[in-house]
Length: 525
Length: 82
Image 1 (cartoon, rainbow over the protein chains, first blue to last red):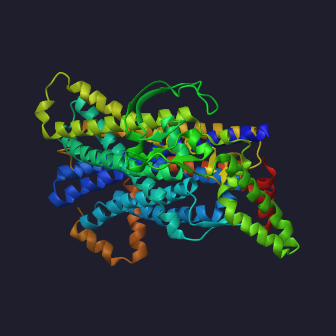
Image 2: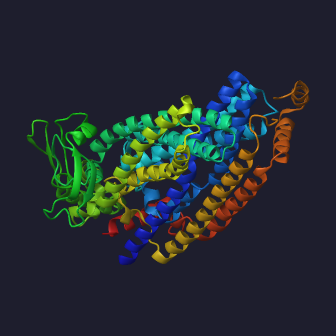
Image 3: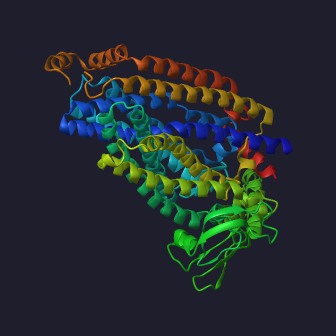
């Protein structure tokens, strides 16, 4: 068992490594794709060669990032088949459908039109070329949609029923899966955050060029589009973050409690604006959860339920099955002790299914089906020895959530100031401190990536120990592999992805440096 | 901007020929794209040939050939693990 747990940890580390590396490429493709499409639209409307030059500049960078990043996500599908085979079998039909659509429709759409984008400048009409650029950007977002639908199903498994004969969850409603509140919130929050990252990239690279005194007019055009897309992106990311919080509060209350380091909730629950967790605090003791914190009254109740007087459960409340109505009256929910018992009943039913099916024992099969109907929703809890095992890593969830929110606030301010300097350039040009703004613009690029990765860490670490919420913990999702086998592939991936990242960054920097040295307003296109 | 003669020349050829020429000319005119295609080629070779074949076999296929056998293996794994 220890070997298996070790294999779980290494497989999780491997998946996290590949997912985070993959996510370094994806948001820039999503964000920069839209920015390039807007720039080309401005060229199409004005027929200005300057806008054409600006479009081509950013399109090259988009192409570099797309080329290096393409297929890096396929590695995760390999991992599903080898490291997470129980999981893959258990969810196959449901998880497979969105991924198949992603592969066939979105990827081919994206890769077809990207060829027109790069090869078609002198071969197709400007209108067709513009359409191809937009379709590439839309195709990238559609690609993300189906991946996010699959991820959302893991957080909130809806639209399916479990078949004990095949040991698989079978889809009962495609639309329940594709349009679940979790999927919708996740899609918009993720894609719009990518707009922010694309905007930060354009503002940062333009800042570097202005610091070097190169292509001032091109930079101002870029800042205008990048600043607007970035600003719109961060505002909408915040709004969709609000709807994400409501969904998490309904479907994953344990995650929300961990995001806030909240052990005992209350009506009119405040939200921690800044805090340091007490490392000594656990579910089993009465230590103060925080060493220090600054809270906003009613904040968490408003965020979670859009109701300042509502009750938000803490970790202990969720475990004990305690909730309250808005007047503070006790409302009992299903405690984790009961969930564990019902999960074990469901597992026994699955275990006995094969024998009952072989002997065609109709009464036993009927009992099994009744048990599964009542208790399958707690199936995964049957693997837990005690309720505390269902608590995610609180510190990591708490700090990454607060980092994401803090940086999100900074990005809103940053984008607004960037736009101010675009429309009022006299405020900054020629000023001694201008260089510090340009340096800040450059530093904001990696800061935005950290913010984006933090969001994913909150989503994925906050739902531990589940591979599929309430149905399958990681320790059951994993294949019966040795930890050393997974370690080998972990390090292979670490080397490959680091090499790809180095290639991406160095080619991008070379292209930026080379192209910025030519006068983009006079370049012959 | 596409010239008029260019449009006429390409529109006279058949569909597959036009597509072929489109990609051929596109690849020929690449600058940084050549480096990127080399990277993509190496990457896909490593992913699909080396990693997929050597390190990432379909685990369940080694435990059973039919869906029934695979389901039985998963049932044992899922009901036997605590």
